[in-house]
Image 1 (cartoon, rainbow, N blue to C red):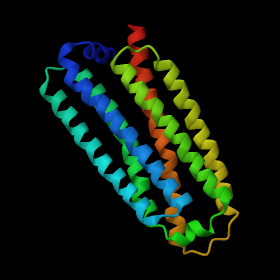
Image 2: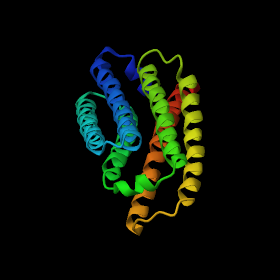
Image 3: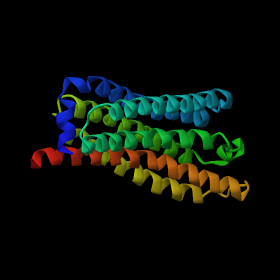
Image 4: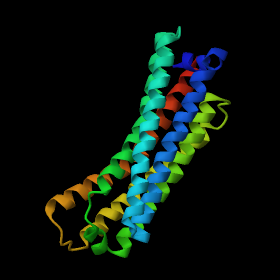
Length: 227
């Protein structure tokens, strides 16, 4: 993986680097828009406006996919060391997983009947909002981490540690959320309960996917240090 860092230093890599940073920014936008949609849904209770925002997440995820494909075309055409091509592909794929998780939540949450949210306690709503807020903080460091990897590589450890810390906070909030959900006697059908559980699984997976990117970047950095 050390050869990937060397590739980033070459002038021929500028186009790929610019697109990789753009890809990371688009991934971040997906998570931010998801958070906005959740706030509108659970606090403002404006379903139409919330669904418009969730649709925007879908469009942003499509944009991220398009950038990913452009990067893959670029690296397949270039005269790259096979290990560089594989490492860069893995990095972009892991980034794309973050956007996919955000979009997975946005698509499923629109299927939940409004009565479920109306029956949810203030504690439950607050925990959902806290989970998303912490996830947004987490993805903000992901954007910084990727940019630093592709440019100066001075704060990778700092950003990675922040991501690990925030991912752990999301895990703790999720445990509290699961307990809170079970304290309410919901009057909805079983499939709704199943779908809600699936939504929160994927919501938690956003920060897991972010941490996976951070861990992979740390592997890249460690391989360079070992050379």
